[in-house]
Amino acid sequence: MVFLLIQYVCGKLMEVYGIKCSVKNVLNLDSSTEEKFSRHLIFILQNAAFKDNIHVGRIVVDLKQEVWYQKCHDPNCRNFRSSSYPLPQEICVSYILTLDEEDQAYVMDDVGNFELDQNQKSRKNPEEETADVWGDDHEYLESLNEFEQNSGEISDQLLLTCVEDCDSQ
Image 1: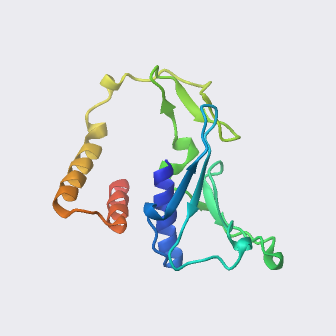
Image 2: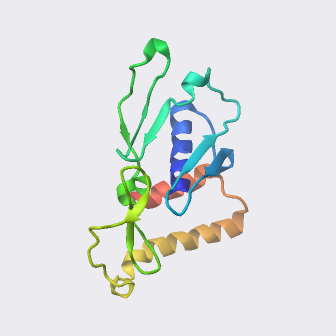
């Protein structure tokens, strides 16, 4: 999920501001414990800087509301808040559902901690799923591996394009 969020933010930085960014430009500070998930992502952007500290927290990603927006903390525009834009489903909290080794489902609570899902319904055994469900993923991974072997390093832009193409199908 963190990798997908980084990809999304880098894509938006390029789309909106023309700033090139990749995973290599992100300092990923993990403060997670067994009880809570906690990450701080610091984007170290080449040839780009915030005017001052007021502008640092301007882009807000709200995982609980599944949106991102711009917010101004400058005294001249303190109450400004842009329209909210939806996050891609892959990085939304509602999409995140993890199973542990005993097939117990966990979800994120209101505070951002993972807890046992109290509304857990019986789930199908993996054997009951059809092979078609995973067919596209297997084909995508095969083609990605083949491309990596034949071309060396994959550019971030090409990888994002491939992921977007796969998601649109």
